[in-house]
Amino acid sequence: MENRGRSLAHVALFFLGCAVILAIAAALPFPRQSPEQEVFIGSLAGAGSLALTLLFVRWDGLQLHHVGAMPNRKSPVFLSAGFAIGVFLVALHSYVVGIVGHVHWERIPGAGFEQGGLVLLGYLLLSGREELAFHGYPLRRLQVVLGVWGAQAIVALIFALEHMGGGWSPAQALWGAAAGSVLFGMASIATRGLAVPIGIHAAWNFGDWLRGNRSVPGLWRAQVDQGFENAASSAGMWCYLAVMAAATLGFWLWHRARESGKAAL
Image (cartoon, rainbow, N blue to C red; front, side):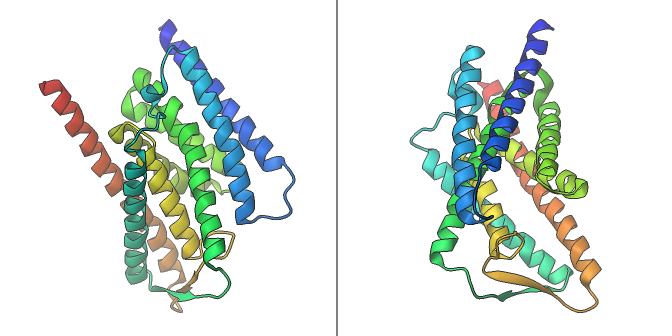
């Protein structure tokens, strides 16, 4: 019981430290919301989250690979695989929403190759920071004392609260961010690392930017056929939840298969 309480206290302190680092990074003066600002915040807050991870794993007598945060020679391959999965999920979501919600996308001028590269870099850095802050040390430590789904529930709730603090509505945070957190967390557990969830996370955010769902304009803009506005909104949310749930199930089955293989040895 003492060890459990100690682990929960350490995780709470870790979450608090990451939140403080993010708040400091976001509060530093920057001329306007832009891809450059996201690169700056992602770099600073990501470095801070990594430093905290190093501190806490040392405090607990662990190593980085115990919490999935140790890069290796396969990390670029897993990152690329995760990004490919994320691109597929965005494309699938867009395809289904387009049919069910009567939505199509039109190309808009403005963003070029340079801006697109900065946006992608920003999302990679921000995704790396969020995966370190949520699905590395805290998820793995909570998994030991609460199991997979108990850990997932707590991390998803904190993930949603952070997004609410960033201006998301409660519905967006609970149905959007929390569902994404469960997928990223299951990918982290199944692959025993952060490269795949970072790739999925970055690809989803970048895809959302491409189709015009972010504050900074992307390459396309959604157009809804007249009279189908409510249908498009509902389709977007329900299709999102279905895509996240299906992908989470896939990683959960992968995790179960790996655990069954270990038990059979």
